[in-house]
Amino acid sequence: MPFIARQPIFDCERRIHAYELLFRDSAQNHFADVDPDRASQSAFDTAVLLGLDVLSEGYSLFLNCPHDFLVERYPTLFPPDFTVIEVLETVEPDAPVLTALGELKDAGYRIALDDYVDEPRFAPLVELADIIKVDFRATPAKQRAELVERYHHGRRQLLAEKIETQEELLKAARAGFSLFQGYLLGKPEMLTTEKVPVLADTHLRIQRALSSGTLDLIALEQLIKSEPALCYRLLRYLQSPPFYLQTEIVSILHALALLGERELRKWLALMASVVAAGGEPNPEPIARALARARFAELLAPFVGLPGSSLYLTGLFAQMARLVNRPLATIVDEVALPQEVCAALAGEAGPLRQCQELVAAYERGDWLACDSLRRRLQVPEIELRAMRREAGVWASRMTNCDAAMEEPMAVTAQAAPLRAAPIVMLHRQ
Image 1 (cartoon, rainbow, N blue to C red):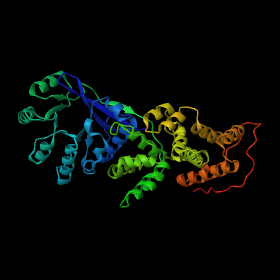
Image 2 (image 1 turned 135 degrees about the vertical axis):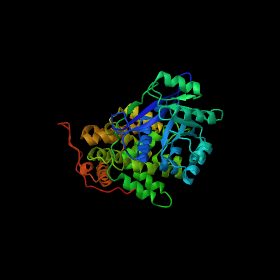
Image 3 (image 1 turned 30 degrees about the vertical axis):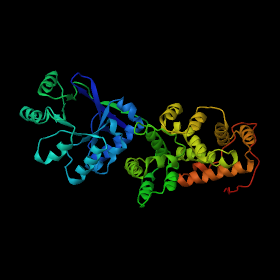
Image 4 (image 1 turned 180 degrees about the horizontal axis):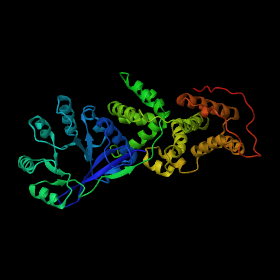
């Protein structure tokens, strides 16, 4: 189960000014001793799954950034209007870091320096900084006074962290600090969301896709369609504040094009790192969900509906089981076409009927299946072939034969569809 914590930052009036996002790898509310870049990547992923709007509640978010996270420009996956890049105290101000921070600054991001110690080598960072965070307990009073004297009158704000007593708060305010953080004001608040199961080789497939000079969007669409965890994460991300989409997402390919190659490469690289150790030991639910989605997609030539809408409806109809969240909640949180949302909500129409047909076949309700296929004018022999083809495809994508299994009739009086030879479909 993914975890994250957020700790409030206050102004002089004790009003919330921002939240700092803090990595957590368990229900224990403390930072685990893990690689800083992995921690930042995991925090990003959990923040997107939870929802940046939910986490921020309209306030700015301080994002902890180690060296490589900065150099790879991962912070641009967050929106600049409410993101503060918090440069960790372990980051050396080398040329790649300063170049990255300069670009981020030009793009509208604010820069904060964590646990700042006033040394000459950090001068280039100070030039870029908007906020300087000072550990109020670890920094001697004389050094605090020197920092205030040096920076209080400029454009930078001073933030006193580790404030744990009322006396420390008063001293910091009188000294000239304008932002405050610590247990006295607010402890880190733990937040969690459901785990999204992922196939074991997903990170390797992403890495192979990234190894080419130019991204093949068609191949990437197939990759993301075949991995529900990526599909969910992509559409969840596109529904978040960085985008405020003015156009409706109509397909996975459309979603990839909207990101653009530069940001898409960053998102994919980050996803590869996040899911590398998260392989699902039981891929059967994923295989069955993919088979349903592909089965629905194959109906497109017969029913005159976009294959992308049929696929997304089929996949997200199963997503509630995969991520253990209510379907209505999921639909509200991801960027899906309106007709897909309507079908998932139960609105009558051909798209909904296609999903009912697929569901009836999968549960072996042959009476309902026959009635629906006649209404949609889908030939019986083609229906069997499509189910077989969908199972083969899902089995190939997941290395799991569960998707190949034919359903058993659940109604004693129901008779299965008449036996027909298996044929592979040939469509233009």
